[in-house]
Length: 171
Length: 299
Image 1 (cartoon, each protein chain N blue to C red):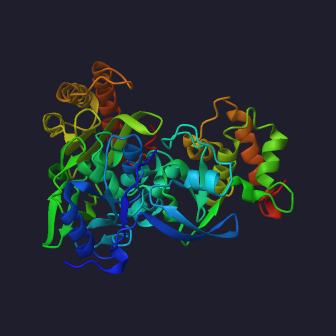
Image 2: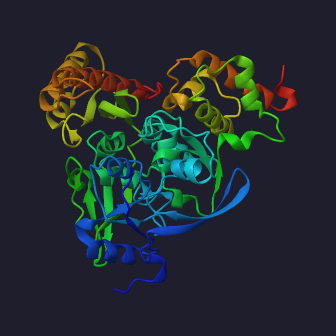
Image 3: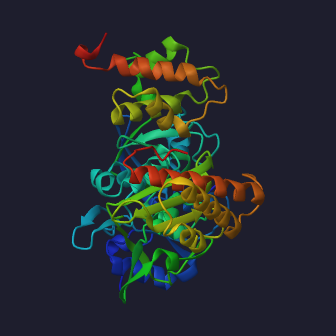
C-alpha cells in the first residue's frame, strides 16, 4: 500500500491559526503541547502549568470556543483554528465583563487559578447563558482553586451572567 | 515532557490501517489524546509514531431506526455524545453518564472510541456500553468485523485489536421502552473509583422483574456483567419485601464477584463495599425509573 502526501510522517508542522484574534504562523514540533507553545513561543503566560494531568484547569484555554487543557493538547491541533487565552479578553485596555465581575466580587486570592477560571466561565456562559448554581458547580468541577475561594468565584460568574443578559432580563 | 514522535495524518481507513500495520508496536492510533498523551508524558507509554485518526472520517452520531441502535463514530467526542439531542431522546442513560464523565475539557477533546481503545479499567463509558450490550465495528485493509464490547476488552489497557486494525464505530442498542436503567458511581475528581450500571425490564403487567442487567466497572481489569446477581433479581416482584431481599442479595453477590485492587483511591475492601452500596442504589433508581420517576445520574 502506498502512502499519499497527507499521510507522510512529520516531526514538525507549520501551523496557521489565530491566537486572541492575531494571525499566527509557526513551525511547531509535533510533540509540543499547546501550553508550552503559548507560554514559551508566544510569551502568553496567563495559562498556567499546575497539575499537568488535566484535572486542575489552570491551563484552560479555548480552541474554537471549546475549553481544553493546554497542558495535554498538541499544539499542531490548532492549525486552522482559533485559540483564546485570558490575555485576549482585554479590549482597548478595558477588562472583559467576566474579568470585571471577578475583580468586583473579590473572586481571586493568590490568582494562580484565575485565568483558567475566567476562561472556563467564558465557555460556561456560551453553553449556559444564565446558569443555575448547580450548572456552575458542575461545569467548574475540573477547575480547582487551592485558596478554596469558590463562593466568590460562583458569585462572580452569576454577576457576569447577569451583565451579559439581554436588557429585558436584567433586574 | 513528551518525547519526539512522527505524526501521520491519513485520510482513509485503508491508509490508517496500512500505516498502523506496517509500524506495529512502534505506532499508536491517536484521536483526542486525553489518555494517550498523559501516559506518554509520564513515560508510561512510548511510541515513535502516532497516527492521527481524526481525518479518516469516523465522526458523527446517528440513529439506525431499522436496527434500533445508536451509531457513534469512533472519533465522536464525549461532548458530542453528551450534547446530542438524539442521544438524550433515545439513550438517556448514556447522555446523563456522559454529562458527568471526567470534566468539561476532557469531554471537549476526548473521544468515545479513544476511551474504549485505551481500555482504562476506570471507564464510565465502557461500563454503560456493557450494560447496553453494545458492539463495536473494527476495520482494517482486509475488511471489517463486529465484536461485542465484552470481547473487545480483553484485559486492563488491552483490546482485541490486531496490528493494523482500528475501531470504526460503536453500535449501542436502545434499551426497550419498558426498561428502567441507572448508573451510579463514586469518584474522586475525574476518575471513577467504582461505577455500577443497572437496567430492569418489567413483565407486561408491570409487577415483576422480567430481566435484570448489572454492569460493574473499575473493580477488575475490565467492566463485567454480574450474571449471578442478575439471576437473583429475575422473576422477583417489583415491590415489597421480596424485592428488598433480592436487592440486598444481588448487591452482596456483586461485592463477592468483584476483585478491586488496593490503591490511593481506597482499599479493595472499601471498593467492594462501595460496589455493594452503589448496586443497591442503582437498582432502586432503575426501579423508580420504571415507575416514571426521573433522577439525575450524578455521583
